[in-house]
Length: 629
Image 1 (cartoon, rainbow, N blue to C red):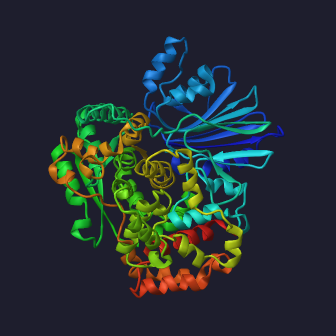
Image 2 (spheres, helix red, strand yellow):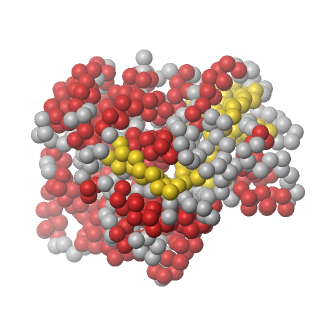
Image 3 (cartoon, rainbow, N blue to C red):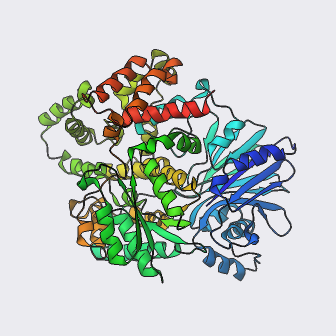
């Protein structure tokens, strides 16, 4: 893991060393081992390095090719770097170092933009071509590594985190993107290809770009293809899953620094830990987190201990208390945008604890999105199975039931039933993502002032989901749900959480389940196979039953988050009450203060659970306090 940045001045003006250095040093935490800058004619690159492979000075960045016509700044890990090196050497390419940075550079020099297709791993990089005065940049297939940029016609600038770019592109309330704001309120994160601030952009996952005098040209080089097939048997699929996952884990064990695993009580991290322990010639370090005051059934530490004992790991546990909200401004400062997955707080703390022992951690992220681990996929399959068996008169009655406006304000069980009926009646993949415990469409209409509703117009958060659905009109509903989870929830939410929380303490996190060949394999499986036996992650559970203790495999999925509702009523109540008093979004005329007051009072009095709505607002207001004048 590293931090990268750069500036291109299309006028040919020399890039200020002071400006470039300030941009680079805004991401010092991402790479404490080394720092460098390169300034050419009309461009400059910056790098902060966390040394993982080849710890020698030969890995210094920015790095050039032999004649110094190409310069690269790079963040990530290429897991097939040894294989690529052998291939390139066989074609006459010479190397000066053993680090994967040079692999990326030589691949581009040898194959051009198509070189990115040869890279297996997580990455974001930029290569300046001094002779052509062009910048080539690319982001990995699933968006593990971030790439933020601005472009005003004369100046193009990029950085691993958006905070440094605000020096060049001042944010303001007037410059907020209504669609991105609508999406954040509804989902608690921003899409992997959008930003809240107009003019601040993200290179989408699976894309590369060419920046030149003529502007920017963005090209997609990869996307997951949901094309399920019934060609294989269950045993054949289990055998291929075993082969791909073992290879993904083994490649991610390559490191010249200490390495370990994040271990919860779930099957994903359990499998990664088990396979890593089997492939390692020494005991693996594992780390688990629990929450103070959690109910025993919500505490995964006991389950994690079972896995740790079975595979002989050096295990460490951490308990997170409610006082962790004090770090929120610092977290938001690093995200550079509002982010409301409260799991980022314990993720930061477990990363900090792990960093005192290791520099690289393997995680189980990505298993749910590829192997159908969320309830929305299983419920969509159930809805699909019964849709054609209900008489038409009952269908009409159900259509009327799903149209009842106040349904989202009722008990969560009724809200879940309503979403299920909506799936059943119209087969749509959009309505179910309008989660009842977030600022769903009805609640956003209450929150916005008339001015903000007019500014938003028809640019609803749902339109971003609809855009994904529109690309695959013939895909079955469960597969559509899985596709949306993979493109939105994973790319915009979970990967952002892990990247920011770990980079704050200079820890690199690698996720074997995000191996793109494993993701492609899962995408080819029919949904009935992924939900084998009618269970979420059914195929993966069957595989896990052959490796992990039975207690782990039988457990239902649990979220990696504290008891948010209770914490907001108790330890964090002053934080919530302060939100009602000081809301800048209300003062700026975007939100109705009366609506904010209502959700604060109802939640604190125990009359309703508005926990996630309130946390979304807390994170949004914290972002405004940190970044808006």
